Every structure is written in C-alpha cells, then in structure tokens.
Length: 110
View 1: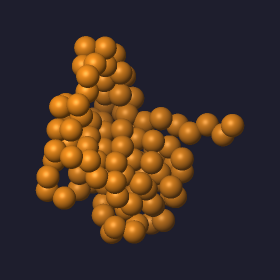
View 2: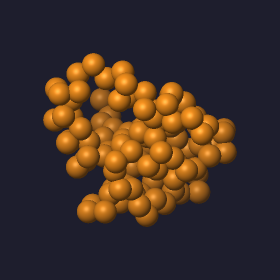
View 3: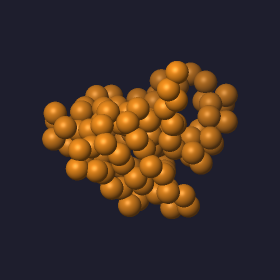
View 4: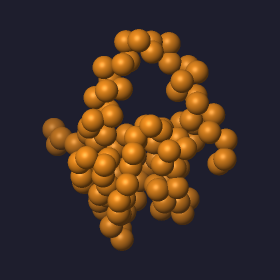
C-alpha cells in the first residue's frame, strides 16, 4: 500500500492494520464500526465512537491516537487522487477549512 496516488478501502480488524500507519501519507476517512478512538489535532482532543466518521487530511497534525481494545473501523485512504480529480477546488475551500478545524462527524441516531 505504498502508492499514495489511488484509493484503498481497508478494515482495521480484518486487514490487521492500525489507523496511525496512514497519518500524513493519505487523506484518511475512518468510520468507527466498534469501540472508540481518541486523537488530537494539536489544539483539541476528539473521541470517535461507533458510527462516527473522522476525516484526517494529509496536512492535519494528528497525534496521540489511542484505540480501545475492541476498536474496528473501515478506513478509506486516498492520496494524490483527491488533488487530481477534485473539479471544484475553489468552492471546496470552505469545506477544507471546516474539516481542518473539526475532523470528526458525530453519528446521530434517527
């Protein structure tokens, strides 16, 4: 998985991988399936629970990542693919700023 150009979808449990392996090398989307994960962006600390989505961009400073023993997540990894195939770079700036300051979306039960 050294190619940082394309996209990869993995599961931490089934593929035996840790989310920390990909910090700074990929844009990382983490959908927590079980357990919890805590992390810091250098300014704030976040806790992702089952159903939450964490988004770490390559440029984010992600540190102090800790996962519970029962942690499992589906992880979408995308490298330069996003930069090459994002047709609306100018209009995506507000979304990028939001994701940079709030890299986690809390799941809401409907």
